[in-house]
Image (cartoon, rainbow, N blue to C red):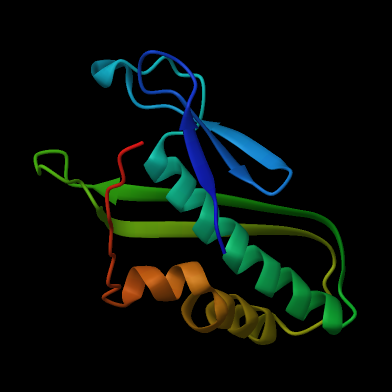
Length: 138
């Protein structure tokens, strides 16, 4: 899996490309950002929400649940006084609308499995992931 990030202005606005898909990333105004894209930690929350949602919605679909709407609200708490400010707690709210004819405990189990077992983003956040880097001058 690969994405490419390229700066698109003189400051800290970037475009991220993965195949034919693109999105913009920008930093906070305090660092020169212009509010013209997602901030990196918003992307992390988005990745977690979407990863868990794909698995959760898929499990519901396999049980014959026909959702009229599937909405996720996700928020994270951070330590503002630290040099790096990782999330200390993340809360996910799944809002389901439709014919949910299966028992609520089964729906709860699907949500739990989606977030805690099946989501690769969640697994990456839980595990100590080795991140390597290199620098290339061109």
